[in-house]
Image (cartoon, rainbow, N blue to C red; front, side, top):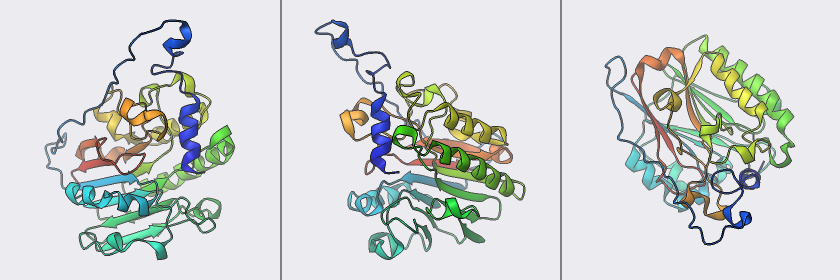
Length: 311
């Protein structure tokens, strides 16, 4: 799946700003276009429900090509945000081709990379840590999925951290059946980890779970990222004992998106999708402080997200 597939899929269902037909087609002329409704990331909350101070900060970002993102000063933003752990998706870069700007970063002495075995410049994830994990593993133990370099798991004393770039169902839903298989296998993998210790899952999960999670739900029900099958897969993940941290804290917050196609000025109009998540084991909920959408950070067609946790 290329990023263009996702972008095109997002635009296919674009029927005006509110999911209805554009005003011009109704014969009404001269009507001013609606001003976009933007999302403003509120101040960070650094205390958990049970009164503990946040002591773990994790940032996740689909960079849509790591080399281009580095050139667009993505690392400057990372240094300002200064997370304890940085998770990246869609790096599209073999380890041997990684830019020195990131491989030599002293802030993150422990760096782990996964890429596609078969396609150069496709998929790929990374975890960069300030402190060394107990153990790091790659993939989910199934060759059909793992050859695409989509998952890294880092074990820390109090939790597992899993970063994932979930396969897109693609334009025309040509990979929807594969995506359904992935969802079942990935959920089983996460449940297996959760039986050992709680986990944080972060990354581009390539699904807008509910209608509130994208600008134009009506026009996108047959498009990748918002099919009933993909949404059900995410529902079943939550039912297996996990929580969407953003929705846990902000259940009614609309217009909070993490992806905008490069086409049609979608970002400036905030015609977007929430595809990037921090999903937590329920056991970590008492320590959840905040789940942030850093939608002013540029450098990709996704924005970064940050989790504050007390562990």
